[in-house]
Amino acid sequence: MHFNAYGGNGAALAAALVNATDFSPPAVEAILTEHRLLRAAVTPGQAGELRVWARRLRPVFGELDQDTQIRLVNELLDVTASKPYVSAHDGREPHLHFFSVDADIVARAKDTTAGGLAMAMSFAGGRRLGRCDRDGCGVVYIDTSRNGRRRFCSPACANRVNVAAHRARSLAR
Ligand SMILES: [Zn+2]
Ligand SMILES: [Zn+2]
Image 1 (cartoon, rainbow, N blue to C red):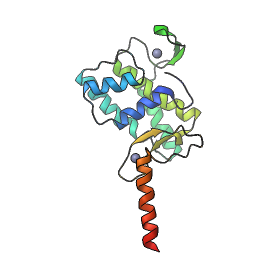
Image 2: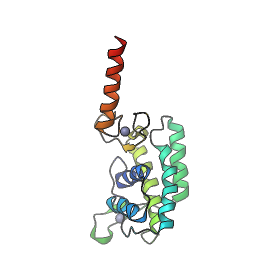
Image 3: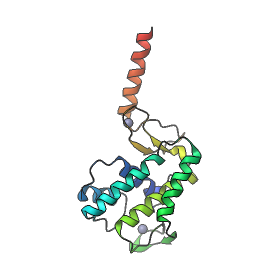
């Protein structure tokens, strides 16, 4: 895992899988590669396994009850829970791994996402694992803003909510 206080590429991969709508093998491979997993080719069966996994990752984001959020992350770690270790494989800088390099891509993706979410919770706080506040959006993100008060997935969603609020205020006058 490429580490930072927000869970590095593991937490970012978790968010990307939750937000994914296309779980065809090429689309999944592109997401995994973008988040720095090596040997990321997947079969249709493996892509399907990651779609199921993404459903388990989703409730961790935007969960406001800390105890529930901790329990959810621990359940993910329970499934994966390989021993963490440091590696400088393939000429990379030393970085933390939560998986065995020889594990298959599904196991590596599961370990990396569970480990990343656990890191983000432990070092940045669970509120950094956000879900867009606009009704009907549901896109999740890692809040890396300085004040940690991000509420929306994008400026587009923020604008839509602000415009609606403004209109409601004008009507109330
Ligand atoms: Zn690595
Ligand atoms: Zn949104």
